Length: 334
Image 1 (cartoon, rainbow, N blue to C red):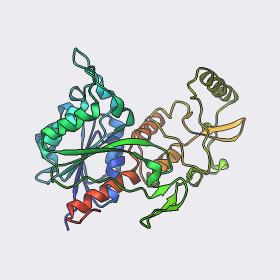
Image 2 (cartoon, helix red, strand yellow):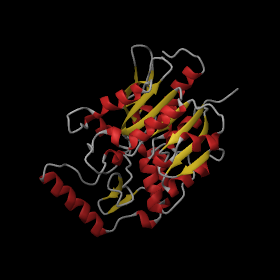
Image 3 (cartoon, rainbow, N blue to C red):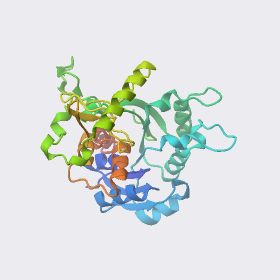
C-alpha cells in the first residue's frame, strides 16, 4: 500500500518529518540552508533527498529532479520568525515580504493536498504597519492559491511531550475537507471527559533525566555562574520582568527548550542543592522534545542544542499527521 508523502521546508533537524514518519508517511525531501541541520536530517531520513540552500533559490523543477514524479501529499515546515523582517521600504511585519512567501510559492507550485506550517505564538499578535493581523494575511495568501486554512495554538504537554512548549500551527487543504486539530491526550491532572475520553497526566520531566552521578562534570555550573543567575533574577523581578533562571520541577513538564539553550541553560536548569546546579545534556533536551534516543544529531554542541530547540516535537507532529492521514486514506474524521 502506498504511503502518503511529505516534503519538509525549513526542515532543520527534522522534528516534523520524524513525527510524520512515525505516523507512517514517506519523507521525500528536506530543505534547509544550515549545513549542520541538513546533515542531521539526512542521518535520520536515509531515503529522503536533501537540498542545502536558501529556500529562495529552490523551485519546483529542482525539487522534481530529486523526487521524480512522486505525488506530494503534504508539505510541512516552520519558516523562521526572523523572516518577518525585511530590508527596504516594504513593511517588515508583512509576511508576504518574508520567508513565508516562499512557503506559499512552493505549495502553489507542487499543489499538495495538505500543508502544515508551525511558528511562534507571537506571530498571532503581530500586525503590519497598516494594523492588519499577520494571521489573517497568512490565511488570505493561501486562500488566493486555493487553500482553506485554520490555525490553533497547541501545547506540547497536552500530547505526551514533557514540555510546556506553545506553538501555533496552520493547517491548510485544497480538498474541501473540514480541518481538524488533534484532541489532547494528556492534561495537568488525569481526568475523564464527558464523552468518556481519558486524559493521562502530563509527562513529568524527571522520567527523562539522567541520574546525578551519570551527568558529566562539564554540565554543572560553578559558584560565579550560580551567583550571576541569582543576581539577574533579583534585578529582573525588581524591574517587573519576572524572568531569570528557571528551575525544573521534577513532577511537571519542562519549561520550553529554546534554540539559545546552549548559552547557559537558564531556560531549564536542574537543581540538586543551592550550590549544585546544572544544565541539561543534549540528549536530555532531545528527550524532552520527544526525540527517540536513536535519533542522531550532528555538529558541535552549540549547533546540536540549536537544532533541538528549533525543532517541532515529533510526538506532537505525529498527532497532526495521523489526522491528515485519515483524510488521505478516505476515513471519516470526527
